[in-house]
Each structure stands twice: as structure tokens, then as C-alpha cells.
Length: 353
Image (cartoon, rainbow, N blue to C red; front, top):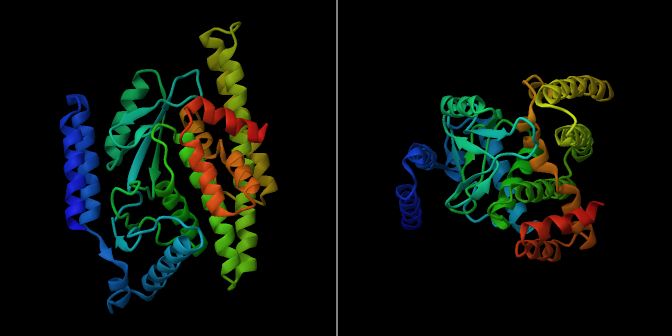
């Protein structure tokens, strides 16, 4: 295992040596940030057996082991050694992602990397570095958004640890998170962020549904709460999608100059805030998206939602067409990976139109 670990870092270091000087510092922080996390891993089973571990931590870690077994045996996800270790990173987020979009476009800027391909964000292990890069992009006239990330997948390159950034979540939230990240290890298309995140989100939802049904203790209460939060999330995603569609129409107008478009854009976001307030009335005051809405709304921020949910209905339709049988569903999804981006988007669009 150690030899494989070192070999993969050698490959990463080789990739780093081939990039331009401008990117050298970025790849350096990415490699050494990942190395720092991996070097601090502690085996979960040892922590559970350790008398100095708190009962709360032991219970959570045992739950994680149970979730791992469920993911492997019931969801057929490639768990291997992932989430068998724990790291206390002593900060609220492990990575800060920078998102950017042109001032008059919803489409996110993509950054391309040697391993992950092209993705719609640029990650930093330092919040200050992320904000500094975002500021530079903003000065170039782009809409930018910086968001903290609690967990991520290395796509099977390393055995991902459970992080302290998520350990205090409710059990069902931990299960959803692990199902999402493990789904990335199963299927990942370099350069297609929308597909990757939508597939992982669909698997998160289906995996959680099955996990809740399999766990009888307080299942009814948890399912009721989960259904509520999922419904609120669907309402919120629908709001963001409608705003994105409205802005796409606005940006395509040829009878508006940039000043008029800028003013109309501000009005669209002002209306979005009013619509969100109305949603909260329907949610009996649920405030799960207040922090998101408190930011200066822009195109880049919208893309962080549309990227994760755009193809979820289509992928769930494919799951339904395969009678919720995971082997055939995975085969159907794997077939999409052999298509071009245009072919894949055409097929997915046909599932929801």
C-alpha cells in the first residue's frame, strides 16, 4: 500500500514538473495539501478501540464503518480502503473552491488538470489563496464565488479518509455524503462536471433512500426530516434554475447594451431574494440556504447549484427505466461514458423533455 501511495505521488510530481510556471504554485499547494491530509490518517478501528477517544467520536466512527459496509454490499460502490481512516484537520473546511463565470453568461469557466480533466472549479487548501485567486479573476471582469468544501473524492487515486469537517453531521447526512463521494470512484468522466456531480447526487439520494429503509431505528422520523429537506432542496434548485433560464434569455438579447443588461441582471437577483423569502414561508422558516443567499448573488454562484443538479432528473429516470436494479443501471450509466459530450447531453435531455 505504501509503495502504491508513493508511486501515485511520483506521478503527480511528474505532472507538476511539466506545467507552466504560472501553474506551478497551484499544483504545489494541491499536492502538498493532499500529502498533509494523508500523512495524518488514523485507522478508525484503532480510534474506536482507543480509551482516550470520546464516546461520541467512537459512535460516529462505528456508524461510518456500518455505512461503508452498506455502500459496498448493498450499493455495490467501490469502497476498498476509503473512509477506513480519520483525520482531524482542525479547520471548518478542507478545501475552498473558486468558481467563475463571465459577467453575461451562466456557463462556468473550466480549468483543466492532468488527472481530473476539465472541471468547473479551482480548489485551494488555503482560504486566503482561494480568495486571492478569486480577486484576480474578479479584476478580469468575471463573476466569482468562493465556497468551502467539507469533503471531496480523489477518484480512487488514494484511500480517502473521513474528515473532522463532517464528523458532527447526523448519521443520515454522513451516509448521503459517503454515497456521493464513493459514486465518483465508480463513474467519472474527465471534463464533464455536470454529469459527474449529477450522477453522484442521484446516487446519494438513492443510496440514502435504501439506507433509511434498511435501518429501522427512528426510520420514520428520519425519513420525514429527510423528505422535508429534499423537498426544500428541490424547491431551491428549481428557483435557481428558473433564475438561470431568465438570465440566459436576458444575456442573449441583442436589443440591450451592457449597461441595460447589468441593470436587468441586478433586478433579476433582487426578485430572486423576494422569491426565496416566499419559499421560506412555505418551509416554516427552514433556513438551510440563508448563508448562500446572503452572498452577493452572481452567475458563478448560480453555477454551483446547476452543476450539481442539472442532470439528476435524467439519471433518476434511467434508474427507473432499469427497475431500480443497480447492476443494469450502472451498465446504462457506463454506456454514457463512451459518448461524446454532445451525444450524452442529447440523450440526457431526452429523458426529461
